[in-house]
Each structure stands twice: as C-alpha cells, then as structure tokens.
Length: 123
Image (tube, rainbow, N blue to C red; front, top):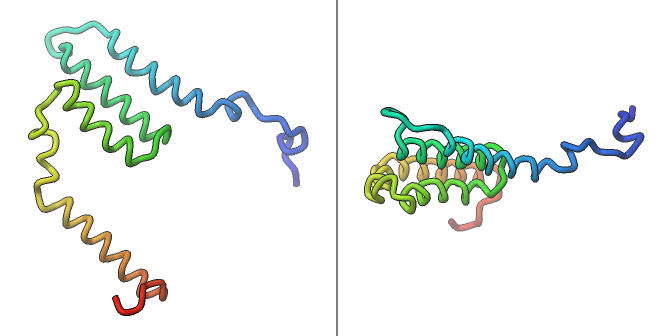
C-alpha cells in the first residue's frame, strides 16, 4: 500500500533540508549559550565549556560529521581553547581500562570471524 508521500513524490520541507537544519541547530545552540549572562557559578570559563560540550554533543546526536571526527574534536577543542591542560584531558587514555576495552572488542571480532568462517586461514 502506497503512502501519500509515495503517491505525490513530494518531500516535506524537513526531509529536504534535514542536514542543513541540523547544522543550523549545531551552530546556533552554542552561540545562544555564549550569550547567557555570567555570574558567580556560571563564569565565562564554565559558559565556554558548556558551549563547546553542547556543540560536541549535537555533532554526535545529529551525525553531522563522522563519529570518529566528533570524538577527536571535543578533547582537542578543550585543549586548543585553553579550558584544561592536555595532561588533564588525555590522562584517561593512560589507564588500563580503554586498552582492555579495545582488546576485548578485537577479541570478540576475532572469535566472530572464526565462528562464521570469515577468518583468514593460518591466523
């Protein structure tokens, strides 16, 4: 059964301009946050952090950029803007947990390859 959209062949305004709308929201939201007045607790540094973080979250949510690019841009933005030193931003990668997680994922992929017969012979 055909829907009304398939019969007419027309798309809604949102469907036609989805990416553009997502980019506008991603850019406007941090700008609006930067316009908020500051006070004792919401100082300029916190305001900048919230704006950069909101932009990063929106990039993830709308998938405006590839996820890898978004995940690299957020910590780099914190360092480049001067919100925190690079030692503080990248210290979680110096612990065992991310490497154990990645090793587990790679192990799971290897087991899946063997189980489905997609593994390279002799490895």
